[in-house]
Amino acid sequence: MTTSPEASSADHTAAATSTSGRPRVVIVGSGFGGLFAAKALKRAPVDVTVVAKTSHHLFQPLLYQVATGILSEGEIAPATREILRGQRNARVVLGEVTGIDLAARTVTSTVLGRTTVHPYDELIVAAGAGQSYFGNDHFAEFAPGMKSIDDALELRGRIFGAFELAEIATSQREIDRLMTFVVVGAGPTGVEMAGQIAELARRTLRKDFRNIDTSQARIVLLDAAPQVLPSFGEKLGDRARRQLNGMGVEVQLGAMVTDVDADGLEVKDPDGVIRRIPAATKIWAAGVQASELGRVLGEQSGAEVDRAGRIAVLPDLTLPGHPEVHVVGDMMALDKLPGVAQVAIQGGRYAAKSIVGRLSGKPAQPPFRYFDKGSMATISRFSAVADIGRFKFEGFIAWVLWLVVHLMYIVGFKSRITTVFHWLISFLGRGRSQRVATQQQVYGRLALEQLGPDFSVAKTGGSKKPAAAGPDDATARRSA
Image 1 (cartoon, helix red, strand yellow):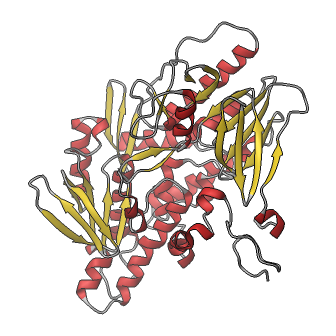
Image 2 (cartoon, rainbow, N blue to C red; image 1 turned 135 degrees about the vertical axis):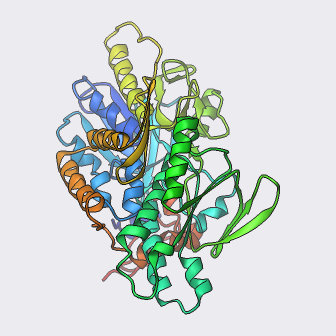
Image 3 (tube, rainbow, N blue to C red; image 1 turned 180 degrees about the vertical axis):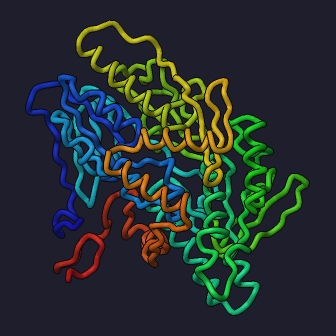
């Protein structure tokens, strides 16, 4: 996207108004909570505006499959406009929300130097959460998280690139460093990531190289907790650990990461001894931090915000003193609910139903109650663990359940068909259909961060520098 020099250097404010005279519902975020709330308002007599900093809806549970070359990004991230194009009362606006004014009932978003103010009558905040490095944000330079398409593509480049560089390395020490992959965090994302890297090294790439034996790659799964998949219970956690060990994954529990750099990371064991693991590729799958908008809402409403940035909401998912503001998904703190997709989906639908009821004068809904549909995690092809109510499954049956459930929640018929096709290639055969990795994928994020205040795309959507005269675009590159 490009913009004129005038638009880049000036702050243009446009008020998004409803021409129909119907109540205006603004939804912040296009994740599970925001999207399912918007769809639930399809037949409601309201005008819906979805504001999000990306133009797609991300099926985050399958990001690790993008990172390991099984799926393409388009299959798990369809365009939000395409999903909602048949919903006549909904519009989609690209922009990062930089402010919410509860008194004025407005939401402010910015993209490429353009600022838009969205007045609302009802507000649903579903901005989700990002990666947490527990106060060590500098770890992110060397250990990308797993929260966005950019993260997954960068990791794909790093993982496949490590094997390519190992093929031309001239010392065994360098080969060992390049072929060591460390995943930090033994929750579902970490377990799935470690398992897929192991399959990639020992199965997919085994015959592709001449100077290295990819099956000798070292995959390490670290966690400071004493158990793998702690939310699944001890039985399934032990099953997952044994399965990973059988695949050659080193599971190291009670191990706390104390430092990360380009060449490896330092780990503190329970006995206090600090050791170093040389590794070129580090993946951070531990901890989440809610959107900064939680703090913004807390300051204005007086609601408590916890250490993870989640804001305390009332049992009906609204802010204290603001029945028109609903907070759903990873941003809300209520009854210690887990940060999973189903909480966001059910919360989004509940908020939409509450809005329709309020506008039609119906009695308030009963307090929000989360229906736990269970948790699942794959370990390898044909093997998974599933915790569904009183029932616990493992092995092939759990894997089939995992396939069915994930297909159900992938948005779009086309995406489901291509996903099944690529799963067949990867699970029945040895191939990976998405092995393209570029330097831009690996280094693009770091290059933008090094530009710092001159181009803070994550925070402002564009350059902070006044645009120079001439046909430059928003990234300060000369137009072709």
